[in-house]
Length: 254
Image (cartoon, rainbow, N blue to C red):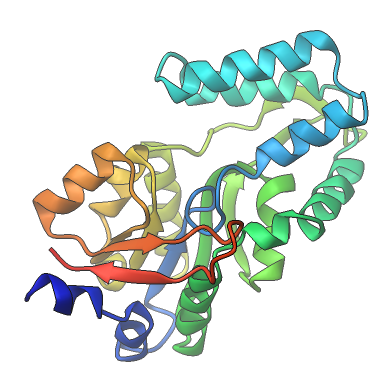
């Protein structure tokens, strides 16, 4: 196949021609895949604007984000640190904040083309699942908007009053543990992973990419892009919906 022909590959058409039914799973990462960027940053920014964040929290979030970006902090430690700043908060109130933030600028960050892909899987009767390392307050508003019924994501640890203890409920869903969570979901819901799809952008998602029959890296980072090239995985290139584009995509078959 020539490069020009590859550019004309239509991922939605491929889904439309795929086997129908709930035994086929379509698993979607959230940050960088369904939406442009990281959903949690909107919450951190909102707390800063409303002067709810103390200076130590602001500095800590920036430091932790930079350390994680450059691989100097484990994801589980980063999430736990962020949860610690919210200790004592009501989960019910945070859910309202998450919905408010998504209903504002958050909705415009959803890649329109990824929404079309979700819809295509839903039309085929596939079992559509969001599987993300994000927390419920960030993941669930997006899932409701896209009418995704199943969400595998991280959850706050709560006390008896429904307030945050400052910890994340175990196991923390990320990397190989995300793959385990998906395998468990598939077994419990009669989903055949060898016929299923997984859409994600992160290097840490390689473990799950290798377990599905239809891996679909989306704007993959360097490590995942290298694996895609090595294994011949189709790559989806998404344009940024927040910069005046229509959020188009193209499939690239290696």
